[in-house]
Length: 302
Image (cartoon, rainbow, N blue to C red; front, side):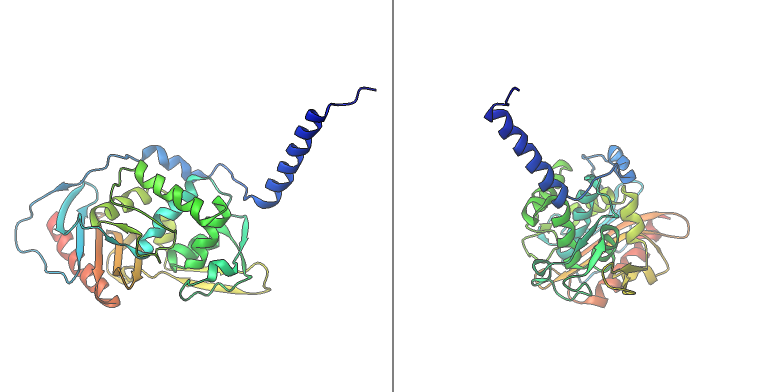
């Protein structure tokens, strides 16, 4: 009988060990339908500044931009290239990266202690197990930081690896002033500009799942390992309750960023605008200013 040499045996053992490790520790990936949207994304997206007749509204914001979505024209601009912290608007890029990876959203993940550290308020307790779809809704709809960290771990193995992918994503999209240090937005070094946030919104809604989640008012998440336990998530974008339809949107707040909002709105005539306000000194104020800017903007494109 021929005895295999040691080199061959070593290779076989290593292959078996690798198989066991990755089978036990890796999220499964599938061909996700949203990845088909990537072919339509233009990484050279530009906005054309347009001089609008008449008096422009004064806004109590650090920077803002209003874009005619369908024509790419900037109708209103205030400090649109000023680099600022963007807080939880970060999560829009986080979800784009996750969808790009073609993750199976029915796979489950457990909230760990590391996810809960300095995560601000959350209804996701340590030990709760949810599927990735519900974690996506929690991260985008309710801006849950624990959900964002769990999603990053589940798909890239570590927060650091996932963040590197987020930075590679914005570089590929030509966003030179956007940079991330983690996927939640809690780090004030996560920065962008009003102009580039508007571009992020245009890229993000090319993903049907992102548009679906961020235009939803409420979502009921199921905690898989707690019998009869469900969590209600509400959209933090209060433009949902304005007279305009929300195509997509994301709020953000940390002290360094103040209150932020990025959203795409549609009026009753089907016209769309992209609206970004950064550095607003008040929670409700950001929505009042956003409504004022939206009202003015739709009148200008009518």
